[in-house]
Image 1 (cartoon, rainbow, N blue to C red):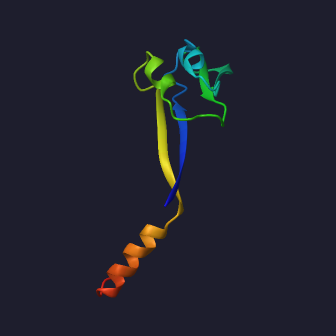
Image 2 (spheres, rainbow, N blue to C red):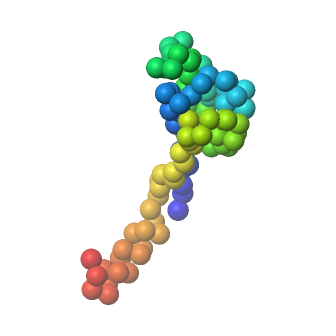
Length: 95
């Protein structure tokens, strides 16, 4: 089975205070500072849309609780094992 890992930071623009720690901490330079401001009057960080490797350096450098999360999931490219399990279950009378 071949997996493709997809990772990306999710930044809550209303909780971000624009300290730039996540921007400095990102080795891939995937996080940028917005020109816009949130309701508290801070420029906020945002994910550029590509380059995240899931290292979580941005998460661990962010001092603001709940302002930044890193989401990771695996996309199954070839589901050979899953098909074998489903075939075995079906042969025993399952769906």
